[in-house]
Amino acid sequence: MPIVRTEEKQISYWTGRKGLLEGRETVLFIHGAGGGQYTWSYQKGYFEKQFNPVIIELPGHGESGGEGEEAIGRYAEHVFAFLKALDLKKSFLVGHSMGGAIVQTLALAHPEVIKGVVLVGTGARLKVLDVILNGIKSNFEEAVKKINELSYSPKAPPILIERGVSDLIRCRPEVLFGDYYACNQFDIMKDVEKIHLPTLILCGDVDQLTPLKYSQFLYNQINGSILEVLSNAGHNVMIESPQPFNMKIGEFIGRVS
Image (tube, rainbow, N blue to C red; front, side, top):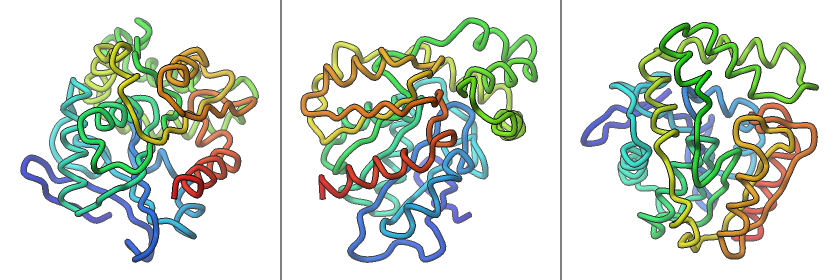
């Protein structure tokens, strides 16, 4: 994966086999806590057919350099620096969970670089279960298993949970803890109504980590937003229900464009 150097970090990213093509909408995907480019494995093939998909790995994650952060605002600054470094103007931003918090923060601070936002399994406030936050420090491997058990619906194939564990266990414990600490501190419930960008809100109907009411709050607060709830899907809805997930985003981009 290529690396772009900002003033502070070396950031790894993926752009597909043909890179960034003229005349196509650019879609930046931002992963959640402990994630990486693998988070969006089921989106790569679909989006590179008609868009310019860009998958960023946040500092301290995947092949990106440095440490992670303990504040959503700091991650948002890194993503903004990344957009400037690649000269990406008026992009669509897709953020999952913690990535959704980053997207909301950017939508408030830098709407001029954004054409539309997709908020996936996220909220204006992201309180973290004690069993996760404390568990990462006391028993990292068990915490990783618990996170993945809570990330999928009861009907999800066990192989998805197994893959999720093997992917997340590669994240350093201190980085994963920092991510969840950042989520736990995040709260823009009084400010989210100030987002005035085309917005699609996507979630699974059996999301145990960011329940449906989180998405419904976003829908009620962001004027003109669209809420799509996918059946029989949990927190990792982009992995569990990739086909309808991809189609909903593709249709949204088409309408905005």
